[in-house]
Amino acid sequence: MALFRRRKPPPPAAAPEKTLLRLITCGSVDDGKSSLLGRLLYETGSAYEDELAQCGGDLSRLVDGLEAEREQGITIDVAWRFFETDRRKFVVADAPGHEQYTRNLVTGASTSELALVLVDARKGVLEQSRRHAFLCRLLGVGTIVLVVNKMDLVGYDRAVFDRIVADFRVVADAFVAIPVSATVGDNVTRGSDAMRWYEGPTLLAHLETAEPKALRADGPFWLPVQTAIRDGGFRGAAGLVASGKVAKGERVWILPAEVEATVARVLVAGADADCARAGESIALAFTSEVDCSRGDVVSSYGAPDVADQFEATIVWMAHEELVPGRQYALKLATQTCLATLQPPKHEIDMTTLEPAPARTLALNGIGVCDLWTDRPLVHAPYERSRDLGGFILIDRVTNDTVGAGLIRHALRRSQNLHPQALQVTREARAGLKGQRPRLLWFTGLSGAGKSTIANLVEAKLHARGRHTFLLDGDNVRLGLNRDLGFSEADRAENIRRVGETAKLMLDGGLIVLAAFISPYRSERRMVRAMLPEGDFVEIFVDVALAEAERRDPKGLYAKARAGRIPNFTGIGAPYEPPEAPELRVDTGRLSAEDAAEAIVRYLEEEE
Image (cartoon, one colour):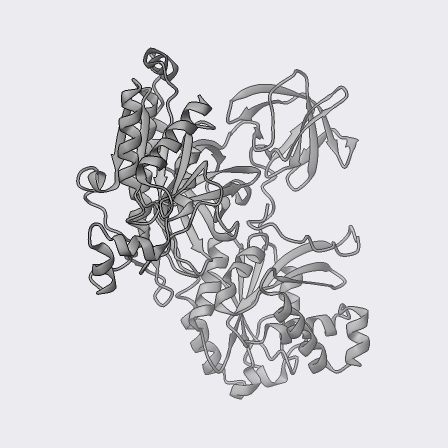
């Protein structure tokens, strides 16, 4: 499965006798990708009929058209090209060279078997050339071809070619290097009289004979379940086979629950078949009723691992930096969960390709991080399975894809830790206290009145015989979280720790009040997701910034205006108001006493 959801390109015309090669063209801006593709399309007669008619045999016009089309589409997708020869069919992912569109390179490379990395002979190997080649290798592209283009503009100088080949060895140990001139046609589909010193094949000849790595048909059978089927007497699962093969009568396991089942029927393209192999979309029926749903994995021997903590390589693709401690949505194959990333162990320096210290990842940064998920995932290292090892990260507020990840391995501690079943349950503790445990989360600007109102609410609940505990922002930072600052990452970790502490207190049957600015919706959503439905009550203590600054009970706004407190919420850092809080109290109109009374009334009505 590709790392990113995208339009599926229409398949080339069927020709069973021809093999199919998926490749990607990449490299820095203006290194000649469109010229090369235009040449291949033109020379093989595979350009679209309307393009051929429009260009009237003028290759430069065809190239201009390809470039314009690609530029129009790069913000959301790669451009797909198709051509064929007598021996083979080709599907080409045409990735843009612009640094801000590295995500498109990842999209195309995640399903490619061969990469053409173009380098302008005049410029040599640039940082973007290294980044693209490094990513192709990282994403499991089996064959790398260095295409040194525009040799005509350096007088077909062999020394220039040799120097570029030597520089490229820093990026890849094994690759094929071919000197070409895409505009003239040298060594693209025909040999070059101007480069008699080159004795290798033309680019097209190499593409026709390249033998990329095959799908893992000889490995264990893995089927990420896309759909659970309940249709008449058919009870089973459907999906795309990630590896191996399966046959009628085989014994399989449904993961992560580890339920055993036997295959009763195998359907390929809607028809019964004796077996199915990697790359085929299938449906399986089982001999007995088993619980199998989307996100599960059907496996034979050699089952993939199940864990909730991993080390992964992260490719960051958002303009906003990665925030360690923040929760992101994670999608791996057909599985979806919430993931929390730790600070990077290191980042890859694109100049040296060596690890370098890093506290976060910026746009196009590549680093190694630990992460944990809110539920166990069926997975495999990416080098073993693209389908079960590659995932995407999604911002929970904007729903934008912000990163791609490649699992390196599960963390040992995730497989050595197991939840302990307790005899005295949360319900039993709450029943003894005669109350419903809930977390009252007070959020708002500094000076809005959160702590004042939370104190009053706790006093009123205590007077009614309720068992409570108040977690106040300043008090927690003076103890549990005194090691944290006020960066975006530290704020996220502050709220995560508070959420975990509150969760334990709720398990003890308490009503917990938490008064924190908690400026980001992502972190408030993270805490809500930790708790059972209905246990998180978000209370927006609302006040205009000017009024909060006028009050300034701790003198913090004055210090922030004087530049003595950087990243102060409302001045140097944003506050994201709740979109749908359970309660909103406007302290510009209500007194603290009236606001507290309204909150207690709400709780009593919701009992």
